[in-house]
Image 1 (cartoon, one colour):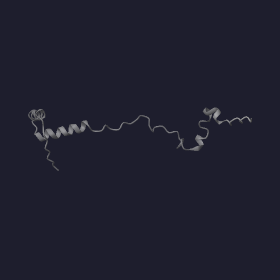
Image 2: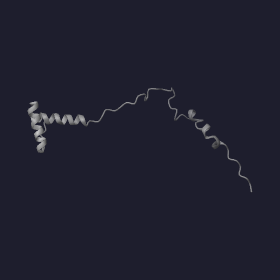
Image 3: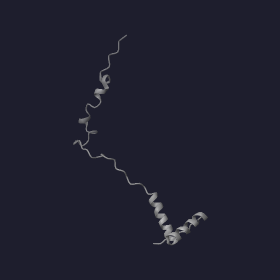
Image 4: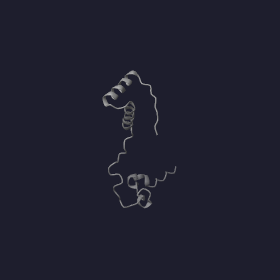
Length: 92
């Protein structure tokens, strides 16, 4: 499928297009197509980066966070006094 495109070029851009056509020996259309491809490559989204080590280690336990057996005493040691029963209030 071919598509025709019209574009208005300022004098500087038109001169650059003519220079490229002469220097490369390409048609005006080929210079424009290559220019579009270069702009597309330049602005393409970068490939997803992979974080090293993610998902590579297995504890053998399927879900430490949601299995109540493994979370039973979590945080009790650090809470200290908060777990103790409050002292009885003095009766006046």
